[in-house]
Image (cartoon, helix red, strand yellow):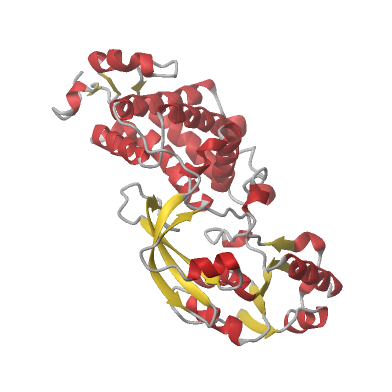
Length: 415
């Protein structure tokens, strides 16, 4: 056993002269009864490393199982398959994954990188222990690692298409088992927090942005990975979210009148209506946003996403904000953006109208037959907008409804 390993780690792992990495017999024998997989003495070899890297490279390039029209990109095919299977197999795990699916997908890809490079990891023990400790805060239990591992292997087999072999399966399972073994002392000797449907959140800021609406900043004891970041160090994670609330009902009035420091229950609303701005080619080339009142907020966020990729997004965006008075929506146009300014560029235009009609849509968006409509607002407004869009030449199968009804996504797939 001629490899180099720190004195601290020498009780847990060894590195052989050929570069293979495995567990010491004393450590493996202590925890073998807690290992759910068949590999009780995992040894990751250079051959395993090569197989994992080659397979992951093939997946990222697109295998025989990849359909560009359906899956958009190979990596999206990978993480959507994984999370759909995971939440179908173990729906109780959904509250653990509260960052966006795109961000979670990048984090999942990071797991593959870890499996591919574990043989070279001088700090494998400290990294694995840190990961296990971090997962405790998310409510991750021992059995969850088994479910995730099984789903990961099944996903890799599906997305690999004709590139999958028993040898590749063994390589992934061996690497996963080795890391899981090293994590076991932390997993077995610590209690994870309870998984709850909601999180207690403190109102840390309350800022008026119009006569009836406020932007509330909620702070909570749960780290989210911000969009565009997927590192596991936690350095860039955030534990705050901003929400915009319009004082138009008893419940919204209660919320906007809460004092700074008040504690509320924070629930996650899931939506399949979003843009994958890391893949601009997947975004419709002609986008029409139509919203009622505060319903413009999610579309302004999506519009800001398009603005960020405007150099590679070769399309256009037309926004129609509907409200009794223009002042009712003007405040949102700048207040909800990161810059605090309206989002403006040559391929985007923002319009106002007291009502939505086919004539208005044709006036502001002449290419409706080739446009995708995104609509948000009360049910009757959505119905009226859909009718106007079709009457103006739009297609029913190009209509996307942004809903605040979380129940409707329960049985739907992540798209």
